[in-house]
Image (tube, rainbow, N blue to C red; front, side, top):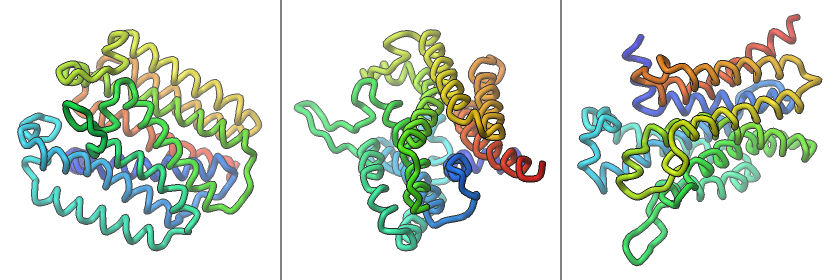
Length: 287
């Protein structure tokens, strides 16, 4: 079971499933019944493709990086990795062909930002930059893209006119939640980022202050969520349990020292939030 769990994480299938669960949570938060749609396959395969695209660029342009623990699975399973990239592209193309035109229109700017995050497209006098290498922008880009992709696609697919204030509140909630769980990744990469001269929040304010910002972002997420869904108790309970458990994961040192802490537990908080929303939704219907 442990090997299978590690396989899901190493192949980025795990975080792709988390993206789907987070999108299903959006359906419920919008007052819709949780159900399968082609855009869920777009979310899954787009996430799988993007996360493996970053690895693919590393394999092609910086083979020395394969010696690091971060890329150990790719190094030992290069054939399977190429097959996974092929499957993610094939799955993404198939899902796009099944999706509504409006969904694709909304996905286009998100896709451009996402690809620009990984691909070197900005040329300077000295070298070629990716969006993620612009000082302080990396975690904000991640938070914006995840929020937009997992919230806007279900809204567009539904053909229902939702209250603009509700949509903005949802985008804000999701943004601060993703921000809270993304900052620890920059804390982990502080030495590597310092080595390449990339300015991040932990490098600017220190590890302790960066973790405090993460706690603050999570608190903002919980405050807005309670205010926004006060009349939907089951949503408040689901997001409340999600927020409290995420705080525990961020705060307890023994958990932070676990081998798969970042890619297993922190990424898993998105899957957990979606699962909690799903569970509390059906408990609400039964009770």
